[in-house]
Image: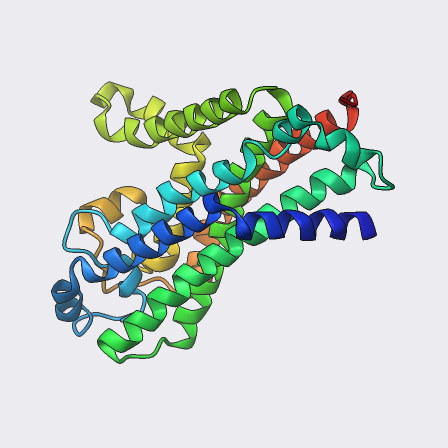
Length: 294
C-alpha cells in the first residue's frame, strides 16, 4: 500500500504540473465558458418555460446539438488518451522504469498508482468544469438546482469519470504493448476515430443497414456515453434519436430519477466492463513483461 501511494502521489504531481495538463485544462474551461455564452439569450428564453431549469444550462443550445454534451462526449477521450498513451513506454525508453522497479515497490503498485492518478486527474478536471458551469448558471438565471437535479448531476459526473477512465485504460494498454510513444498515441487516436465513426454511422446508413448501425452503436463507448449523459441531463429523453429530433430541449413528460437510472444502468455497466477489460489486459501484460535495466 505504501508503494501504491508513493507512485500515486508522484504521478498526480506530474499530471498537475505538466504543460500537457495545463493546456488541456485551459481548453476545457474555455470551451465550457463558450458553451454557456454561445446561446445565452436562447437559454434565458427557454429556462422560464420548462421544468428542470438548472439542468438546461448543460443541455440547452440554439444549435441542433447541445455544445456541452458534445464537449464531454468527444473531449474527455482526448484527456484520457493524453494521460495514458505514454504512461509506461516513455519510462521504459528513458530507463526510469527499471530504476523504479529496483526499489522496494511492487509492479502492481506501479500500474495501479498510475491508473489511479489518471482517474483522479480526470475527476478533478470534470468536477471543476461542472462546478464552473453551475456557478455561471446561478449568476445568469438566479435559480438554484433542485435536489433531483443535484442527484442527476452527481450521477452524470460519476459516469463521465468512468467514461474517461476507459480512455485512460485504453491509452495505457497501447503504452504497454507498443514501444514507441508516437505509435501508442496514433493507435489510441485511431481507435477514438473508429468509435466516432461507429457513433455517426447509424445516422448516415441506408435503410437496409439499420441493423448494422444498431450493432455498431451497442459496442461504441462514445455512443454509450452519449446515451447515459442525455438520459441523465435530459429527463424526458428516451433514446439518442429523440434527443436529436428535439434539438436539445427538455420534453414536458420527464422521467423520474429512478426510471432514468434504470434506463442508463445497462449503458453504464457496458462502459464499466470495457474499462475493466482494458485495465485488466494492461495489468496482466505489465506484470508479466520483461523490463531490462539500461
